View 1 (tube, rainbow, N blue to C red):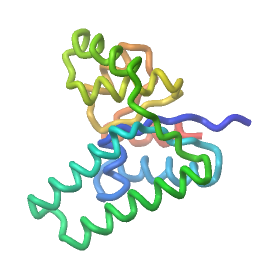
View 2: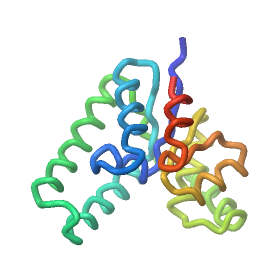
View 3: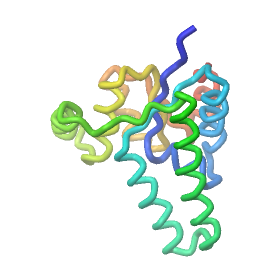
View 4: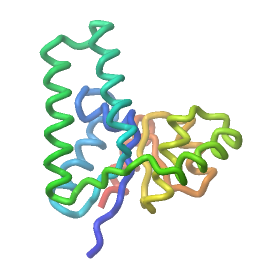
Length: 162
C-alpha cells in the first residue's frame, strides 16, 4: 500500500505547535505519518516561515518564552524524527517550483510564499493540500489540487486523511 502524500502549508504546520482551531487535523496527519499510512510533505521554505510565525506569536506575547522555545524544539525534533522514519518529504525550493509560482501569483493574485507552496505541492505530486488560508485553498482548487481549509472543513479534512 502506498502512503498518502499530504502537503501541509505553513498555517497547518503552525497548528501542530500552537493549539488552534484545526490543530486536530494537523495532529492526525502527524499521527498517521508515524503509523506509516501518510507521508507529510512541506518545503524547506515552510520551516523558515513557521519559525517566523512562532516568533511573531512570541514577540506579540501570545505565547511565553518557554512555549516559544518548546515549539521550536518540537518542530526541529519532530521533523528530524519524521525524516528518519521516511514519513516526511522535505522538499527543496526548486527553480521549477519558483518559476511556476510566478504564474500562480499572476493567475490567482496570491503572495509568493503561498504560490510557492502550491507549486511545491504540485511538483511533489501530493494527493491533498491542507491549509487554514481559505483564499489559498480556493486558488489550489482552481489549479485542480484537492485542498481543504482545516479550520472551516475540519470533519472533511479528517475524513480525507487515510
